[in-house]
Image 1: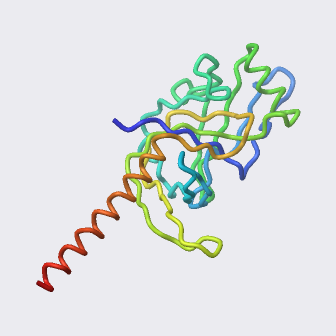
Image 2: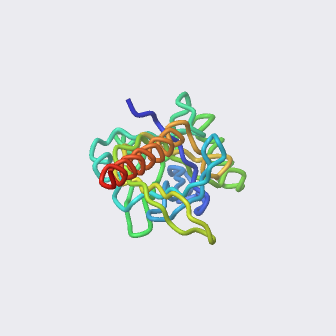
Length: 197
């Protein structure tokens, strides 16, 4: 079973979308920017790039079961697609969202923290269904790149620390890819040796 991964976006700020007397408090931003490689590090310190392909969440969004959470805390839901209080829009840049905040303590806290600029990042939780690994040149060195082609989106969160955060799933995924490369190279060497004999 594939595990849930969490990523926090650094390129866009979450912002107040609308507010006027007696109306809903709405915040929003980009959950993810498409085709924008981000440098990541696995638990052994190996660096790799990761990007989300355009439309990677399209199939998942049809399920309409995504939630908005305050800092990934499942006890503090801010909105949900099924209730109409969380809306996603996929454009050329990425997947953006709007949350109509609840009129409760953590909803009001979220609004105040975003308005003051204390919370300025977006994060998302997902499970990768299909990814493609490759080797690319990055800042003068060869590095692995993971392109997430299809994934299930579970939640989006306004977050305190807007920086990509790698997970064990991602680490295992990189190690699995490296192992498959090693196996292919070993098979190639074995075939070369057998043809020479």
